[in-house]
Image 1 (cartoon, one colour):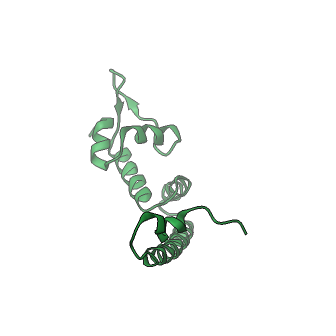
Image 2 (cartoon, rainbow, N blue to C red):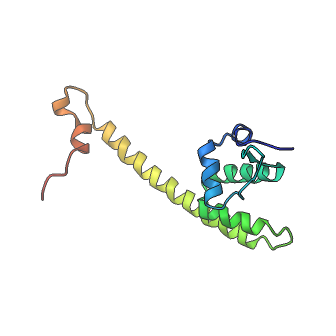
Length: 134
């Protein structure tokens, strides 16, 4: 079955510009062309783009996606490399969650310090303003 770039875009909810970019950086192979010079994709490319899209949705970097694709190309290969990439990504997710929790705590404290009133006395505006020189 043949797919146009528009078909690929719709099937994977990926912008056409992004598909072209993935081709440019080598995540997707350059597609065959029709006699009218339109891109002509097959089921394999659709599957690969779906994989890329899902990995990106999960927050994997382009370099991590490239590595996952490279390792997954050899189906008999040990999956230790894939596990290592996933574990590295999980550590990054945990770091981001800790940063967000700290941010939430700080923001909540600023909000809780506000007693209402007028903007001139607003503790939130004061907290967001420049730090006073020591």
